[in-house]
Length: 233
Image: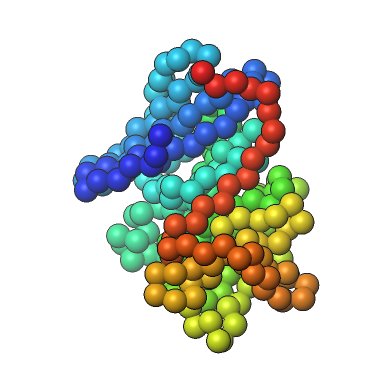
């Protein structure tokens, strides 16, 4: 079930497995662009085989969710922002929206001020092992990426671990796609027009190691996984 977008609305999805019931769940958030940021939220559970409305549980009537999601413990997380700040030319209000897979409630995780006021389109969510991570890009060109990690699950406790800067001889964008178990970022580097390669960045030596995989720019996808005995279908 891919995320969907058209001129009237956008549908974003989240997926996780309840750690107590081992019941896989899909969360669907539909955001309508022409009706004062109206939205609808639904959840599908494999055990029930049905969709149920969750709109009353969403924390705010005014928000925009970005499609990327991560699952940490029993929570699904998305980057989000208050669109009214953009429309009214107010300081940005970015935050993280969470969904508790166990009780099916939404919540908000506030960010440090420097991330809260950053350009929404230049933030991305990820994780290192079971720790939530925010990626902070310097601009649309993506020549640098700051890696912020939430400490001990405490709200606003994000600490900047390191910054990845593209070497000047690349002169192209870098995108963090995910992390190894060791915490090393796996990155896409644009090396020519519409051509990219995968590299691994070592924060301590500041060295980039080529993996030897090449593809069309923005076609790489890296996902984390957890082994499970749950059978779907």
